[in-house]
Image (tube, rainbow, N blue to C red; front, top):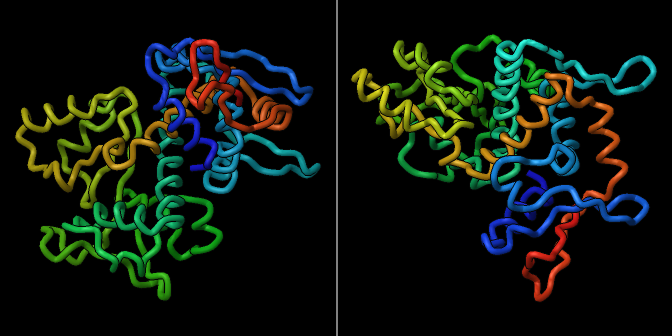
Length: 309
């Protein structure tokens, strides 16, 4: 996650409800300020596409290009978007959530390879280990369906793998992979994670849970806050799923990543529905200054303050 994303998240955490009339504004190339949205409306879920595009558009394009191979250069050197535009709401949603699963996979892999602690946390869950041990430092994470894997680790590229979206390989010997912990019922098989994203988990994951489909932990990012609804389903069905190791909530492991994924979903769903274009994302991120700062007294915004993006 970029520093801009971290800054805006931390900044908003410092604004209390009495300060919700502070506004987001975009500082244009001409130096003018364009007021876009109040903090109150942002918190209520009505997030401005313009703000999201400015803060997250560049990183979404990067993910779609480098990891999903859905943004490419044509023969004239122009960027082209490979994301389908779908008018049917049901199919658009299904297609978009599949892409979001790949984006979540990419964010986890990038986070693990950028940070030792992040890698230890995710590797712990992937191997069903009891502790965050430094033995995980010898391994790097790889997304089995990502374009970066196809380019740099082609022998590990397997987009048809129905079990593992993410695996861990030894940095000095990528043939050797991280295995499940010795105490696990799946001991000595290849560790990994299956990643799912949805706002209707029961419909999306019902059959996977009933059939205990995956031998690796399933990580679910619940956009509609319905993880506990699935827990109730597991209990009522008396499924032999260990909630400590087998079915994990992505938000509980990395809440900042969960929020970032939701921001990407807002933009991606607009792309799929034809509400915005790749040219729009490119234009807004270059026409405006992508900075985040608060024009406030004593470092704390009041109702008259402007949060400049």
